[in-house]
Image (cartoon, rainbow, N blue to C red; front, top):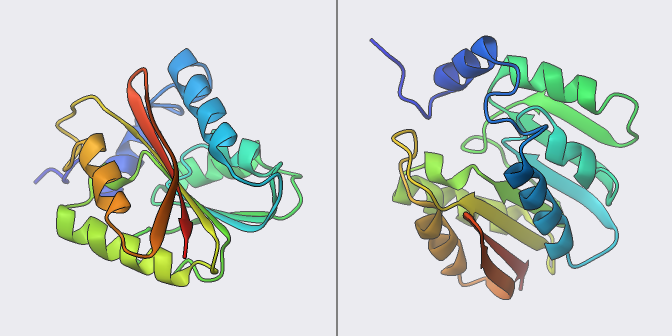
Length: 190
């Protein structure tokens, strides 16, 4: 029986077959997406950041320049090993195996949900967003960025993810924009 395309086993299989399965290191699209995420951050410095679904650590490396402490997780052991290597020597960065579906994310003033929301069902996503927002510090920032294309691997469309996050009653929208191929949103927790 094949694993669901959004399962930890399926992600591990992708990273076993290709070190950078989505071309995060070299794709102009991905580099533009990372630049856009960094521009959406409200503050020059954050005390504690959280990046679930960190993959091979390319965005992690960038976020580390703005966070005193940064916790990054991914469900793939192989991706985490690559991310650890990418971020080796960076002060305050911890990369570990973990799932957003299970992680409490307590005490962060920055959470970046990039390319992860569409792997959940609507109910699961709503639960994850509830937990993430509840665990953030007051006035903490939540930044989301999702591809707007279609994939059989995704359970939700990127626009649906952005809309579901935006419905959370404790979040105030600071910035929202659709770019070439992706949507970004930045909220502050009230």
